[in-house]
Length: 268
Image (cartoon, rainbow, N blue to C red):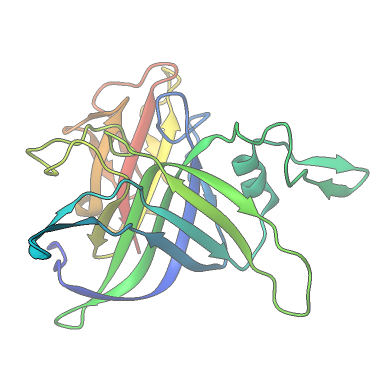
């Protein structure tokens, strides 16, 4: 299979998922069962606002001599809007715990003593797009670290929307732990990373136990083909000789207790 064209026309917004992160910035897998993050169901909008550069007007003799530009002193910020509330997702971003009163489900919101101590998360989202030949591809964005602030609206006669303010962090690594480099990406630090894939992109993780050797994808999200498994990383290091299958991956060396395995692949 061939890589998709880099010239695309995007439309819509199809999918977004939020990952809890461990202390090393990897998706916070807790076992050898695949960790897929929490889907932000009913994705409606993902707005990422890049600030304008600083325009420098160089003047003298009562006229403009030249114009220059310097990088912005603000970072990218954004908003994620979804149509379906998810208490587990909101609890993650607020650093609180879902609780019960009898059979009622509860969640503390608003300003709490956890405000200002919200955990950093990762975001992966995609939309469909067309190449110049009309072929269907997918444009995606990965934010390896971000603060998300849930904004709960009031009630009215309109359909509900749930939104999160996004504050992407400057990172030096991909979500799977590989360092950004001048030779590969052209930068060593970034907030947002974009991809184009032929099929729907997916990022998952597992936590090794020194027993399991093959790490399985979810039954409903198998890889399109082994060519579409773009990488297997163990503790941030690419395992170039890992065995790839459409139902899972087998690292070259059996992952030990606490080792984090991350995979980036495409699903049908």
